[in-house]
Image 1 (spheres, rainbow, N blue to C red):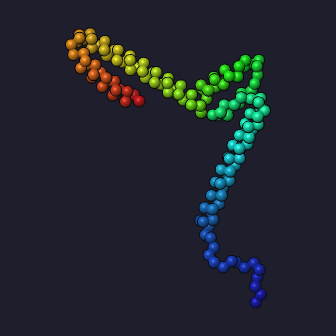
Image 2 (cartoon, helix red, strand yellow):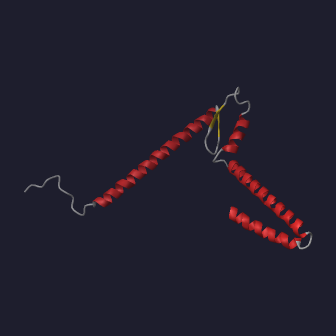
Image 3 (spheres, rainbow, N blue to C red):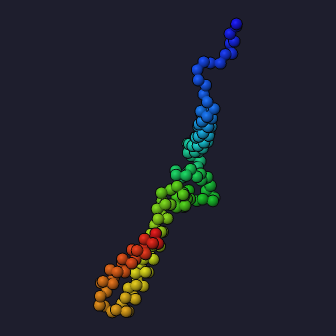
Length: 147
């Protein structure tokens, strides 16, 4: 009997579940590689723009500003404006937090002034310190509920 050169290899065959898992992992790696290749291409374009000196780019999001002296007399002003609105720039996040805190402070001061006025009109000067302490406690609770 002659042996066939197309014999099945000896040993265990990989089961279909393991093969499917390997294929799925390969597809995930391929998708990740494609995503990384796109990002590399964008970064290479950004490097080319920077080396050409024709554009100004936001370091955080990569937005490109074309140099046009007729429209933008100062690219510095355009970049400053973008920094305040860029979702990835720390200055934008700080400005949003500052606005939130300012609004909260105004609410606290208004609430405190209203309560203090009510206290002064109802009780006069007697016991105001105790009432102020109670108001501060109430305001802290209100801030916790609001936040």
